[in-house]
Length: 140
Length: 140
Length: 140
Image 1 (spheres, one colour):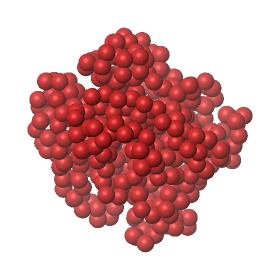
Image 2 (image 1 turned 45 degrees about the vertical axis):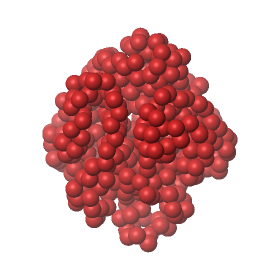
Image 3 (image 1 turned 135 degrees about the horizontal axis):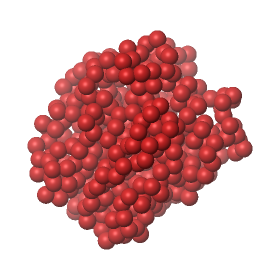
Image 4 (image 1 turned 90 degrees about the vertical axis):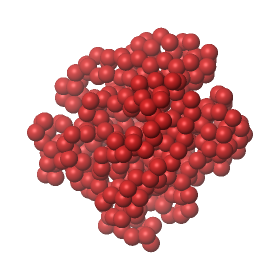
């Protein structure tokens, strides 16, 4: 069984946001898969996806703190500056984390660890809604 | 052909460890695939998987040196500190490298480059055994 | 439908290079897939693949600037130095970005965002040609 559809993640402020439920709700076909893989693909170059701790909001705040220091906005070496100071750091952060995730599927759900959740990593100050292309493959 | 099973990787000290063989031995069904993909998924948020050089142990030591400097334990900006000084850096390192790998499969084996091996990246001081969910798909 | 073949990416200088078209041209079987996934796997440990902005060359230059500062060649903590000063930083950069990408496929093409392109990230001074193992799976 193959399924592919595009969903729109609602706009979020710059930072790291838990979106596991929003994605699962956007692809009800997930419920039909007994065993398979789910490929989640952001169609953008200044936001990213990662898996991390799903319980403590301060973990997500600390991600923002670390990434803002690791990829600073005011570095003298940036040459691509026409789209604002948050643009080039957003591109680098997006590649460090990656635009896509492949998740195992079991019995109609993402087969994640107890503490794992999907983060939408919004690296722009005003990124707007983000388009996600979801591809499901597996057996019923 | 689909196969999915969970294996346990034995506890390792903090650092980077070559586990290609331990994983392949844990999924003998790999031998049945002529062509396919193997999805390796750690069910944790403070350890990760990556592919890198499989010959020189000093490469793996240097990974630990770099990551410990890039994501320091004593940074003043960490707010999620209740689980110990190694916890929040472990979360960031885990997302930089990623919880999962998708490997090509050919003739019953992982189709890796000559120098490529799978690293288990243990970011906690005492991470314990790590659970890995392996999903295989392909044709016989 | 399954397809797997190896292609050779022509040598590039150290830096970040747009290779979407070179890869698509190397696997004409992509055109037969109505819906599916394409797994691109570099068989190396000192080069990597990532998705990012496909229009402005200065974005790719800025990637090189950031990575060279984040993973410096002259750090005192490197112990694996026998293969030259660019070798160990190349290994770390390769793992930060990753050796492989999984791309969604739709109607015979990679289903990427408007601004997304595949970068070959060449981290060695003289990396030579790079071998890429492409695995396609999907339905016609």
